[in-house]
Every structure is written in structure tokens, then in C-alpha cells.
Length: 322
Image (cartoon, rainbow, N blue to C red; front, side, top):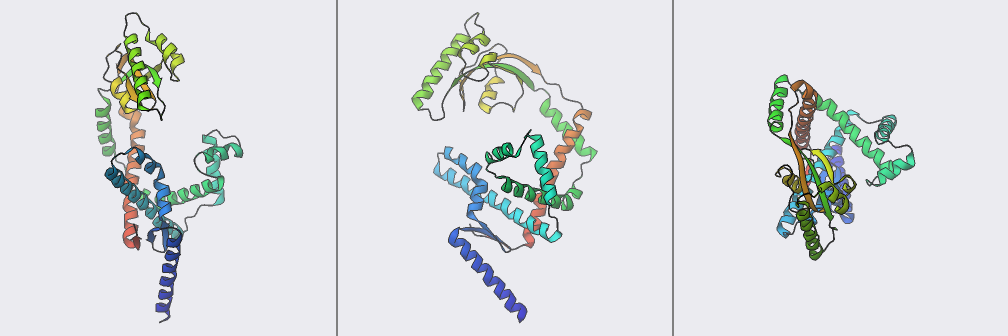
């Protein structure tokens, strides 16, 4: 009887806590006895949600918002479940471990003092206190992963050779291009008329660059509005995946010495010239083996962490409210 009364009291306390939370903030989910507020979910999804302003179709925007909210909520539920395991297993992180991690972050970012570090953190939305708590949570979860997941992660020689075969296929036959460009800047808030005026200016520069005897580098020094103008618009050699997609697509279709039509990116209109192309040699297996092993371990760890969280979720009481 006492056990039943205790269970009833606990249930009433939980429902009361949820009711109070809903008065202040809508409840997104209840994980065992932990409440996840909708504001937490929206904060986690904020960087991705901010990009939805560019989606014009209201239905697509709504569908994408729903997907992003669900992804963020699933991540928070997983973290709550892992936090419970961390408490049960006593895998907390000491103050000295946190301070050592902070010192390491400072060293990696060449931060000289606390004032500079605080300024750096504020740009990321942290105070020193909230950042230390963030580190503590991350490090605790890492201890849990090392205990429950890492022993399962194995990378065989066969795995590495298969990964190298795939790597070789992707790398072979690819090329690097050496390009220069002239940029006509366009403000993010520019009107359609201003965008079109900038395009016409870039078009005139492309025509000028194609005239016999015109030195593209000198023209870029005089007319480009980008940071590379002083170097004659020189971008050096680069491979696929380095530049923004629209820029890259044109750069890798131009022949040596060819000048492009104006290309639009978020920076403005670009006129490109490819100076040279060269094949990329595939690195030998021994040279990339360690990198491939690290990549495979990371991929397998992510997979096993997802499985582990799903196992925890199946055993837990998870009530999604949205």
C-alpha cells in the first residue's frame, strides 16, 4: 500500500511539474521524469531554422521546419537518456578535468588571457560559465561512449582496403585548377535593379578580359572588388569541394586560358579565368592509411552511438508532446 501511495505521489508531482512547465513554456517531450521545453528544441535547431527564410514555398518551409524540429528533439532526448546513464554509472567530470580542457582550447586558439577568451566565447553565444558546463556535458558523454560504445568499434585490414579502393576511385582522374577571378560585389540587400547593374558591369569586364593582349591579372588588380585584387585575383590551385558550388562548377568546365561569363555567388558576380589544370596523383595506401582508419572509426562510432541511444530509448519512458 505504501509503495502504491508513493507511486501515486510521484506521478502527481511529475504531472504537476509538467503542468507548471507548460504554463511557462510548451512541453516538447517528457523523458522519464525530465521535461524538454519547446524553447530548448527551437534553440538547438535555431542555426538551421534561420535558413528557412530563403524557402519561398510555404508548404516546403513548414515541412522542413517540422523535420528540423524533430531532428533537434531526437538529439535532446538522446542526450537526456545519456545523462541518466552518466549519473547511474558515476561518470562525472571533475573541475580539474574541465579546467584542463579549457586550457587546451585556449592553447589551440592562441588565446593569451581570460578577457580575450571571454570575447571569443561571446561570439559563439557562451559565457565562461556556460561554456564550462557545455564542456562538462560533452566530456561526460564522451566517457559514456568510451565505456559503452568504443569497445565495439573495430576496423579490419579488409575495411581499410575497401575504403582505399573507394578513395582511389574518387581521387583518380580528378584535377586541380589554377584560377583567377574579378569580383563585382553585390550587397546582400541589393535590389533586383542593383543586381542587374552589377551583372552588366561583370559582363563588360568579361568581354574586356577576352580582348587580345589583355593581362587578366592586371585587369583584376584594377577592377576587382574582392580581397584577392592585390594579387591579380589569384586563387591558386584548388580541388573540388573547396569553392562555393556555383563558382566551382564553372571553374572545372573552363579550358586553360578561357574566361567565363559572369557567375553569381553570395559575394556578387565573378568573372573567372583558368590559368592551368593538372591531374591529381592518388596517394599510396600507406600514406593515407591512418587517415582512413580514423575516418572509419568515427563513422562506426557514430553508428554505434545511434544504436546505443535507440536501445536506451526503448527501455525508457519517452512521451513526445509535439
